Image (cartoon, rainbow, N blue to C red; front, side, top):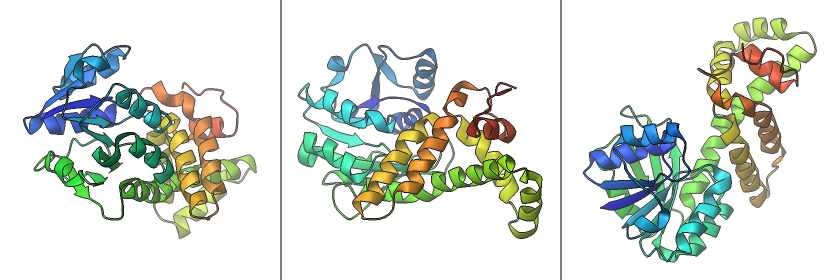
Length: 279
């Protein structure tokens, strides 16, 4: 199959590599992309083209981009008359997914990726829904991407992704917010001591979670808003994930910090004291 991947970030590159490993020709649009993106694409075996118009004779387009760009990317493909299958693999609400679906009709496949970039077996699931979901899932057979079809309608994969990330990423935001609250009241050490007694492993989770999310917090802002919208559409309170979006927004500047920021640096940023945030 001829597949266009938009765009090979950390996750997208691993998705592309899985497809290349199965013998598919995977292209990406190199125009206006960073050197880091080029390196990822080259490492994944993707073939560069200079513009979107060059490659819209592809059989399938797969979009893996930040949530806020999902509709715009879909529109840019649809307005060029793309006639193949469009896969939206982004962390968006069912309502946002439905906007993209309307651009492509029954050629739309909804996707939700759970897990880290797929470089090890058994870590990463790509949930898919829609009329062509089985066809897309077959592209990843016996690869490091475990593609699974979800029943429940054309945007079921996004609903599952939102439900999963609401806890997985929302809980880290809560833990870091709680640590920041304790620090602001001068009881940070006392809280950690109590966690060691009553919540074994939580201190370590807060430390590792701070470092891991600091690099990706800028992406999580939009995802938390999408989750909040999903709660609201279900007539459920959405305030928690709106607050999580604000918290991740305070961490967004750590995007390019080598190795990520340590928990103390992250807590200073959350509390609005960024002194020493490049330590």
